[in-house]
Length: 160
View (cartoon, rainbow, N blue to C red):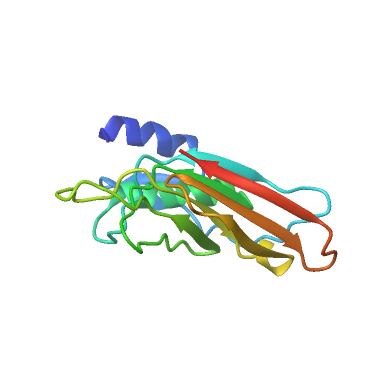
């Protein structure tokens, strides 16, 4: 990603700034704010065009993490994660449920396709999560079931 493009994106997110060629947070974000799940559930979807797992000097990964924290969604459906095998996204304040593409080119340095959900930790205090269907590459269905009212259910799908 070009530095000028990264600067524009970072400028649009008030909690980030660009210092010495690196993306940094201005202040600590509240990652697990209480949410009234009876009235509002914030759900987002994002084709992230690759989620790189390297912690070493990866501004792309840092940018993606900070964007997600700034959006503060309860459920985020991610597509085109490019994860391989049993790779998972580890993001503070969220639980990852994903489906990585089973078949990729043998000489690929990263996966292709791939979908999943990041579920806010506070959401899991109120809901059980079950995987409904993971049988097709690039399609994942989950069900959220209230811990208080077992008849209250919501099915969510992410696909690429």
